[in-house]
Image (cartoon, rainbow, N blue to C red; front, side, top):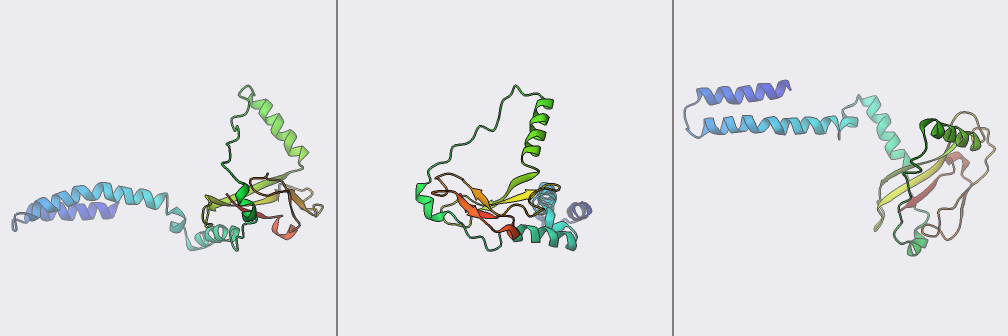
Amino acid sequence: MLGLVILDGTFLGAARFLDKPEWLPPVLVISAVAFVPLFLIALFLLQTKFRPQLQEDVYYAEWLATQTKVFENFAPENLPSRKLRSSISEPDVLGNPGFGGSDLENIRVGKYEKYQGVFLVHSWRPSQQPGQAADIVLLLRQHGDGPLKSGLVDRVEYALGPKFFEGPVVKKNREESFRLEVPV
């Protein structure tokens, strides 16, 4: 912001004291006025889109490592069955509007206990595969102590449906959290 004030102040001051050439003072005034929204847009982009790059080097390096590690050596596992896919219909994500807050909390706690703190998580990025919209990595995560941390899970069977695979896919890669990679 200080740079904007100094730059605009310099332009406006020069426009006030310069007489020749006659076209220069109006150009300096117009430039000073035009720099304000341009500068604010650039500042907004720096604080939003380029925020990770503005972090201290250590934090930026950690963020960058997490972004690249997830999709390192991405190999889509369902491209042979791509011919089976058509448009995917959107699920009903609104749920039942009649639930109250405590009912939803009871349902959440019940599911947490039922699945012993094991959750299916995903990461995605715009696809690097021709004709696909997104690359998705699915894997399991354990919250707290449970069967994943205890090493009780030997394999995971993913059944994504015929638009992705012709049948269930079994993953035995425990060291990779039973990772499955699919483009959609």
